Length: 157
Length: 450
Image 1 (cartoon, rainbow over the protein chains, first blue to last red):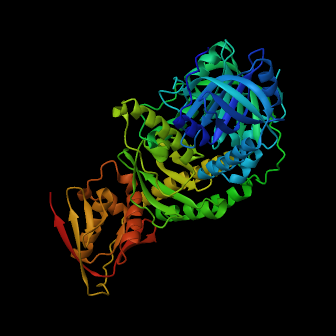
Image 2: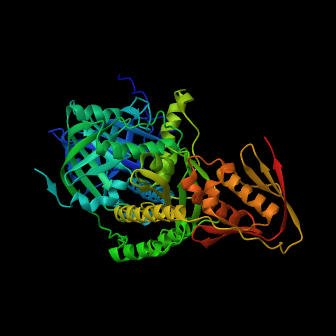
């Protein structure tokens, strides 16, 4: 019988992910060209290793193609105070988003708009970044890195 | 082969750093990496420069696989642009490096990290492709109208009518607001000793701030003065938040000994945009014009160009008015009338630092304090009210070696401080290098020696 995988995303980190403002996911193709796209509505499953995020179906077409071909990804979450983490792993499933996921996406949209407003940017311009026609990525996380700018940036968390 | 569906020159706002950019790279083993970038700088029509401070993995990836992808956001509209990049070289000197370093140094200075928060290098990347990210929402943002030559001409004509340095300060500040809409501005003059600047006037604030000091090399104003170049922060709050995150990291590592105190921002609470433009004649620093706004990205490339021209006009006028004043002959003194009020006010002078207090309220110190005491002493002993700049400049008792060309600046400061702090003492310009001390209350002087 296989040992259960150790948790990588504890409650504190999960809370940090779910209070983040900006989130971007990176993929790559066979030639090692990167392709990035915005991610929305993060949810952490109970095993502490699985992350669900949503990406725009149309704008993320190239990233989705990459994920279908090789699955590897990295996703970063940045709060408005610049505390940030990066999670690396692979995508085990691409599926239509469910109602709970869409609710998380909507909450993230509003959090994102509020975050921009905190720095004087009109919140309405964030609608240019919102996504409703989304697909859900099921991400199996292998590593977590501190991404907060400073001397510890890039170090394993 | 490069593909630009949108030319980089149209993305000027995106490079102000108001909304952070995301950058993706890939390691040779195929592992992608993504992080946010504080500064992306446009280098001509085909390249961008990325600031390199801490993002270690991005640096390592670019060294082995030069491809990167960047998302830029236009803050006025929210439009997003995706740029495919090819890393070409890393620079640690040169014009691009210096431009980005200066911006970072200002933030480091403001956040008390001038010794530890430094630009390590800039990565120059060829832009292979620049494309608008599709959106089903039409932005409502609109570009601000650029200032035209006619308006600049009107500003120049207005400022050229200033009759003396004091009048120039007032007219410049009003004209900056009237012609260009720069509603919050501070006019600072360089200290004669080269150690810093002091405010002589402002527009758009509750108090004029006259007399406020700024040290050379500190903050937006101090660095603009030290490096003799304009300094622009398009999103002050965000840049400070970024710097504070770095500061917290340093403190967590127990390496806080190299940190200094944060420098309080001058002027407007909640300012998002700040720009400081040096007032120069040749390489000589006369002062700094400082402007700010509650709107992020308020000062565009057009505004920077306009302010550079405006600053040159003001600098030349200031130099001219000072030299005119130098050439005037001494004017005989007039004798003043007794004051209208019968209430007596005690004015104290402390010789230690030439500070002057009116009824125990601090008014002014230093050179301006010494000049004021000289005027008050002449008024009390001789009932003199009219003076000339020249006699002040040449007064051996004032001990102004090296400062003589700048007496007008100190008189401007003194005049502003009196306007702010005292309702019965005024300096009134009579033109042609002369001025009148107006005293509307009986005064008694108390000199406190060293």
